[in-house]
Image (cartoon, rainbow over all chains, first blue to last red; front, side, top):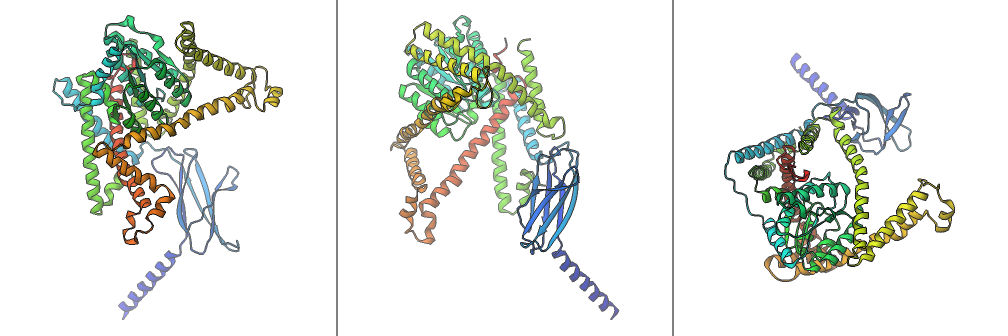
Length: 371
Length: 232
């Protein structure tokens, strides 16, 4: 009998606890994890009777100022732009339509700067694996290991394009994109320019390089000069052929279109970052009858180049071009490392599909940085 | 030495930015912004270099009486006019050497620099942009001509997507029963854009990202030096 009373008592306590927990209203303000201490994560769970909320932060005088007011019974809000290592006090006020009833919930937190962005751990792991493979193949190439690199027809055609320009006695036009030197695509384009300049120097063909930015022009001059030096023809180098046009996007396009129509280059190279102007440039080049090679990392511009140009370097081919053309074993080794990265990506995608079908959500969560 | 110092700077900058991407704590968290600011400062100095190149190349074309040399005069006159008007009366709220130029602004409706920008430069720029519509038509025509299996596939896909983006598509395929709703043109268009198109774009983006990793490593390690002007 005594045992029965005890069981009944526990049962009642359990039911009471369950009933009260369902109606509990909570609000917490926590320092956003793995950041530079400039964000706070607010989470709340309110009763269904409330229709409005006001999330407020205490200012330096202790007066609460509203920072958020979009109502939802339970939700979260990330406040950004805060000072690191600073204590903040918050109040969440929930009220009904008539404002006849309300509740206030308080919380405080101190923002903290973290020494490691844990949500980027999967990225770091992948980066280490890919970089290690690139370094491994570079070292293998240094030791003299033969590496097979697939043919890239767009790059194999460079000789043909320059040869045609030489036969016709017309110049080559090389546009290193319309982005500044801070863009890796521009750097990749300049690396290709070096090889193109070297070949054009060998063939004795003029190369024109219109630039949208002064910094790119400066770097392009050095690059072309080096190409001419490598070809053993430094005297043939003409600095004026690498020139600045304008910073304006469509002004630059108008300038380059004008050059194409006046000078009628026999070979056009559009390599680097391009946006809306890609088709205008490529179509103008097409009408002049020039042999055209284009390449960009911008997926939205690739269809335009594919339609209007004879050869197109797609995505990674632009970055691989310089290594491919130079035939330097070390650079070719890095391309092999990239290929390993592609294989790894394919394996991870397949593993992800299988894990999701099997209901193993942790796999996807891990790569999304959700632990 | 001339190439060693830039290589060393490229190595240090590359490593610091790479490390900073994973450490949000001060001072690592602010490295990227600081280096970007430095880049902007250096770029602003380089503008002078660009302007001198612009003047030199155009003057050379004029003096050589190159084909269509009159256009080069127009370039230099436009450049000079914008420079002088900007210097004398400034732009927007910024005053020039002669102040805000209220009297001229009253007559023109804007400061001379802003007037030319608004009524000469902007229409010219828009004209260039609008050419895109015609070029898209000519490029699409070439791409969609029946030639190979791929071009046929492209043509069919393009017709579905183009029609599917119009209200006409709804009218055209509204008779299809609900059980076969996925065959309605707007839904087919959404499917093409959401799955095959996105998948292809992501494949390009992933491979490009790997290309960036490889290219960046070559630059950081000094294996790729062409952009510095080689080994001089």
